[in-house]
Every structure is written in structure tokens, then in C-alpha cells.
Image (cartoon, rainbow, N blue to C red; front, side, top):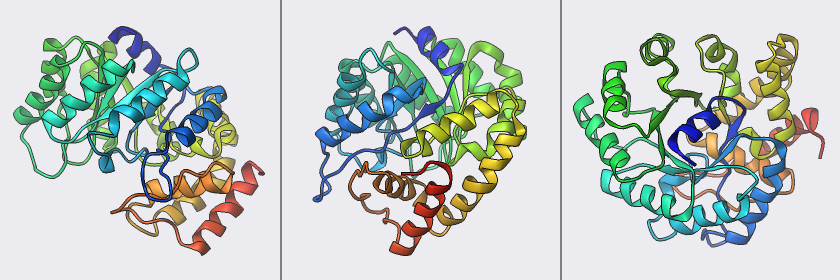
Length: 303
């Protein structure tokens, strides 16, 4: 897949981030992960992000990362494209990007560099170093301390043809509008706020109709139904699902920092596709919260 092919994939459809399976000891469980991807692949996502944020990339070691990406590529070959997560320190991000390319992934999502603040010049150097280390397509993730101005992205695009996507996880409407108006169709755009469904209609109005769904991990039919409602401007269906599921779901998710990932693993366990516990520093949902989530799931996708 060329960078342009990756851009085309990102330009339509629903994308999702599978959770990463761990066993009781917290080690990567390749067999369970492959079974998960085989279950999710037929539901219609345009691409799956292996070892992304919902896949707990931030907790993975350099030695286990290649196996995760290779498992995803092997399992989904011919079914759905795999985009690998990459991020953290520049040299570690390069190692991961090159491992993903070697494994046969179709591109990377370049996540924040973590911890230290950086100037626009420093962010640009980070992104360019990763872009130049690989041939396949790169998507930058605008989130946390990795926030890019349109001017920085424009310069990066001039120098790096394989930079083809921009995912926004900040939610600054003014900034996102400026990015889209500056870059136009040079990039594919992806809405990437946690529980992106809540913001999907607003992002579509900005020129960003594509988003990534985390709840696809446990209610894939409902996730696709909501995406189709956004695509077709079916406001009645959107509002009903927001009322019945997504808003009360947010109330559970917002009970504790880090629950944006933990609640997804809980949901997968409820629907019969457990992925083991989250790794520290995340914490699993409490028993009463799991029961609350199960009740919500039964409303929209009975198990």
C-alpha cells in the first residue's frame, strides 16, 4: 500500500483501535489477539489500528511490539488494512515504525512524544525523522503536548510526501478549522477524541467525516450503525443512540482517569471477548461499574 493508498483508506469509512490482549500475567496473548481481530474484521471497519492508544501502546515494550503488529498483519491480510501505532521518544518511534513496515503494516499513526514540552521546530524535527525512516504512509496525531500549527504541518507536507494524514484528539474547533482550510485535500483527516461518536457530527461539518471508534471493540454493529447515521445525516438515530448509550457511557468513563481504555476492555469482557486486564498505570473498572456498562450494552446490542 502506497502512502496515497493509505490516504484514500482514511478518507471514508469507520476506523477502530482494537484492544491488545494480555494473559493473566499481563503478557501479550497472540492467540487471543488473533481471535479478536478475526471477530472484528468482518464488521466493516475501513482499517484497524494495531497497538494504538486503545491498544495500550504506551505500556508496550520494544521487544513485544513487533509480535503484536505481525499478528495483526497476518490475521487481517486480505481482509482489512492494518495501521500500526508508533510514538514516544523519536528513536523509539523510528524503531517501531520500521518494525511495523517490516511486518507488512500499511502505515503508522504517530502518537505524542510524551512528557517533555517541545517547540513547533522540535515537533517538526521529530515527525520528519520518523517520516524519513520509512516509505509507507504516516499519520500524525494532534493530541496532548504534540499540538501542531497549520504552518508546521504545511512545511512538513512539503518536505515529506509520505505524510498523508492528520488525526485530531484535542477538540479545538477553531484550530481544526484552520488546519483544514490551510491544508485542504493534501491530507486525510480523522476525528480522534475519546468516544469520538459524541463529536462526529460537529467534525463532519468541519470537513472531517471520518473518525475512529473505540466502542467498535464490543458493540461493532452499533458503532457501524452510528457511523452510517452520521454519514447520512440521520440525526434521529444519532440522537437516540447518544441518549440511550453514549452519554450514560461517558458518565461511567469519566469516573476515573484512564477509564477511556479500561472501559473498552470491560465491554469486550462483557460481550464474551475478554482481553485480560489493563496494564498499570491504568486500572480496571470496579464491579458495580461493570454492571452499569453491561446494562447499557444490553440496550443497544443484546448478548
